[in-house]
Length: 214
Image 1 (cartoon, rainbow, N blue to C red):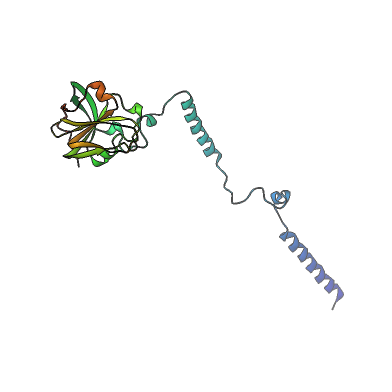
Image 2: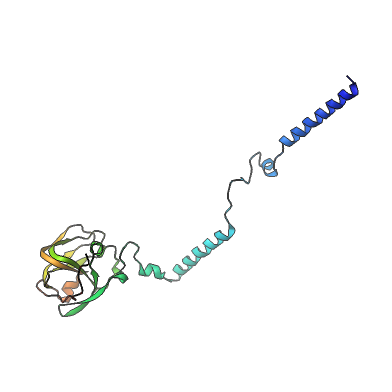
């Protein structure tokens, strides 16, 4: 074989091997400078600066409002633990013991079951009341599960006469029976009955439209 041709082939082969080695060894500057570990992983998602800034602005605004005593209207109006907000309930006037009491009407199973559960003391005034109405007179029993305000309760028959009065302690799960068939139950803050002279045997004037819806 021609020696010059052999040297040419060897030279071309050596050049190809050098190029191949050079290509396979390429690396980014970040990998080289960090000892073989990339400082900017390709799959990590960056947090948009605009969104982060906006979140901080909202958070700071809320904190600032709290620091200067500016209440949130939504928090003031809503009790987050209740299904039925007080402002959404029907309100009637009940005459009893020569006085008139504003009363929230609990006229469905859901409303009667919730009653005054989860209410805070500030949400109920001293002479506010809650009237529970049932379709038919029956033996009733109330307890205080999830109820934080101590209450007075009066069981009232179909003619409006109070047949039983009891006091119920906050969170007490003991049932307080009606001692007779009642169609209504009236609840007020503990001490309201004594303060207003409400007693067994008195007759409450309950509006005719206070009827059970189920």
